[in-house]
Structures are given as structure tokens and as C-alpha cells.
Image 1 (tube, rainbow, N blue to C red):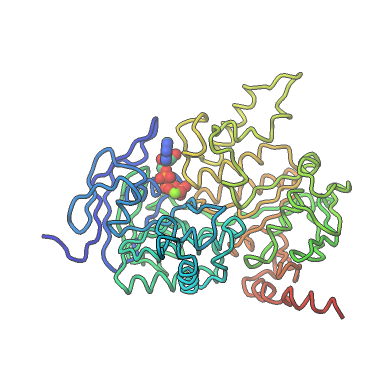
Image 2: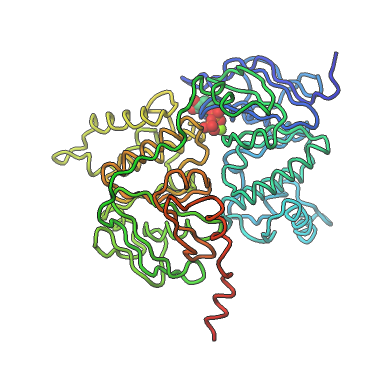
Length: 507
Ligand SMILES: Nc1ncnc2c1ncn2[C@@H]1O[C@H](COP(=O)(O)OP(=O)(O)OP(=O)(O)O)[C@@H](O)[C@H]1O
Ligand SMILES: [Mg+2]
């Protein structure tokens, strides 16, 4: 009766949290040598399901079988013993340890009772080479960007020699080149007989990588289909309706420049960056990871210093490295790292949504609580935040719903210039369209939007102009009509390397 190729089976699993039915009745199975995609809207229950397999949660009801035998997975160690490795949506790395220490955390190679640092670093180096990421095993995790963190997580999973590898939105933080590398690794693992559970909101990745798809909706596994199923059919299964027009761009006439940046330079990071964004305009900032886009955004927002250049908002010169001055002038930033910078995880949805509106909601010296609550409720409804109520702790929202709260917080704030750094990372296809519509509403009411995104179709679809950064410089600007994937990519890889720039300066 046992299928020898079946690695894992989940039967009728149910999981409740206080006030939330996260999983109602879920069936799922994984075979040797397949990539099984878990698909579902933000809050559908994907991460909750895999947390049952990694030992983070226990089901209230239902069974989990490994190799045909019922098992209890009550800890990460249980999962590891069963050969299950998980790359979580929220990274589990320790920021103050090195890359090598993180990879071998709790199982460092030892020699004469001491941690064998040399061997650990050599082994880490080999794993990092396998995933094709150039990072020193001795670098501290705190210093790495989010894409490299992801690759370190993958290296760590490889080091466990797992038979089941679970990846919760691994591509959300990667650019196309890195995604290609990841796919090569995953295909190799599949060939070696590993069973892979793969979660993604990028539908094009499903046919490219997957074998089967299980669709979750509202905590139920509603269907299982081949990965070759057309995207529109997958969307219909997932959200229960068709989704119209991916990029509903409608722009008013543009007005005066709201943000003007001249010669902005931070030595060794970005150089001579100049551009402006007008009222009613969306300017896209494209480029490869490491091109300096996030760094420029943080400098504009006053979060990081710069060495030369100026930033003007509505004609007023902005002081450098002063977040409250930037916010006072009307700049908002939705950061790429929502967990680190965007949210107070232990506070409620309502408190997070109100973080930057405190001042404007004060009436005659009193905080207008009812007004704040109503505004928070409205934006949460518009963005479709899936939650038990406005009082729910943000930590317990699903990843995509946390991202919606970060965006909502800034939409409620009284900004004129909104900088969005990877705004739809981890957002499902239906909710993406809602966010695009909100961006349109912002421009219609005279806001200026600077949008950084590694999702090229999104940058091209939403921007009126696209600036392409390469190696810390603006390599070129393309109006919407001329901005094609090829044109952007050609610019993105065009600039001289930083070293060449440094070198030529010496002459
Ligand atoms: N610890 C918790 N306490 C309360 N509710 C929780 C907890 N963990 C998850 N939930 C709820 O369970 C539901 C499913 O969340 P889950 O994280 O599994 O969604 P998801 O499918 O992974 O979504 P996303 O695509 O946004 O990552 C959500 O409504 C979420 O708020
Ligand atoms: Mg999730």
C-alpha cells in the first residue's frame, strides 16, 4: 500500500490560533524528486502548513506521515532527524554571527573539543560556492543584503543533506540572475531525489520549475493541478475570480518637481546621482541588486549620510541624514526590509498603521482615537489585510499582510513624495493590483512616487519614466514608451565597475 516514492503526506490538518482559523482541512503530499508548489493568497495558510512540517507549530487535528509512518514533529530537531530542512519566509539567521557560524549553528565541526574554525569556514566556503554566491564565510550576517541572506539560508539547508527541502518564497528577494542560479540548484536537488516544497507568488516560476501545484484557499487545500496549468487558471483557483489588467496605469498631467536630487554622492556607494520626480508622476528605479538603489533611497529619506550633492523637496533644501526633517518635508519610505525597518512587530495592526499619522490625527491637543481607528479600518479594508481585527499583533499576520500594513502606514501619512522600495515583494497577484490602484490614486491627487523594484514588468508597467542604476550611477533614463526589458537590462549591466571609476579618478 505504501508508495515508495512518497516522502511525506499531510492528512486533514487543522490549526487554529486565538480568533483565527489558519488551516481548516489540508491534504498535501510530496514525492521523491519533485517540486511541489504551494499556491495561495496572502493569509491562505501556506506558511502555517510548512511550519507544521518544520516543528514550529503542532496541528490541532490531522496526521503527518513520513515514509508512510505517522510522525510527531515537535521541534526543529525532530524535523532535522526526519530529513526535513526549511527555509522560512522570515530568515532565521543570527545577525551578529558570521556566515559560517550561522550555517553550522549548533553543529559546528569540532577538533579536540574546540570548534574547528578553519574546517567550518572551508566547508562554508564550499557550500557558498555551490549556491554561487560571492560572500566571505567570515562576514557578519548583519552586513549582508537581503538577497545574500537568502543564499546563505539556502547554503545552510544544503548542509543538512535534507530529503525534504521546504522553501517559503525564496525568490521574493532575488533578482532574475539569482533566481536562475537558485533554479539550477533546485533542479539538481530534484534530480538527486530530494522532494521540494516551493512557495511563490511569481506565477511564471510555477511552470518553469514545478511539477505539481496544491492550491490553498482560506485554509483549505482546494485543488491539486499540474504545474503546466495556464496562469489565468491558477489565478482563478487561487482567488476564485479573474484578475483584470495587471498594471492599471492611468496618469494625470505631471506638475511641478516635488523631489529634486543633484549630484548625490556617497563615496564608494553611489556617485553623482541626479534626477527629479514631479507631482503626479511615478519614476521607476531599476537595476541589479547591489546597484545602489536602496542606498540612494535611504539617503533621500535621511536614514543614511551622503558626502556630496543636494536634495530639495518642493524647492526646499533638505538637511542630510535627518529622518525627521525628511518626514517633516513630506517624504515617506516604504523600506525593502519590512521586518527590520517597517514595523513594530509586537504592536497591533492599528498601532502600526497609525505610527506616522499621530500628529495629523491630533485634534485640539487630543489624539482623535475614533478618527484614527476609522482611517486604519478603511486602509486595511482597501488593501485587503487579512486579520482577525485591527487589534491583532502584526507579528502574527502572514508575510504578505505585514507588507500591506507597511504600505498602508505610509498611505495614511501626510506625504508628498513616497519612495517605495520593493513594494509588492511577497504580495499575491490580487493584492498587487490593489496596490497599483492605490499608487494611481496617489499620483491622481498630486503625489510623486519613486518606485524601486526588481520586478521588471512591474517597473515597466507602472512607471512614467525609468531610471536605470548600475554600479552606483544612473546609467540612463528611459521614458515609458522606450522602456523595454532589453533596454533596461542593457543599461543595468553597462556602467564601469566601481574599481575602474576609483582608478580613473587617480589620473
Ligand atoms: N501565531 C499566529 N497567531 C495568530 N494568527 C496567526 C499566527 N500565525 C499565522 N496566523 C494567521 O494564520 C493565517 C495564515 O497565515 P500564513 O502565514 O500561513 O499565510 P500565508 O499563506 O503564508 O500568506 P503570505 O502569502 O502572506 O505569506 C493568517 O490569517 C495569519 O494571520
Ligand atoms: Mg507566508
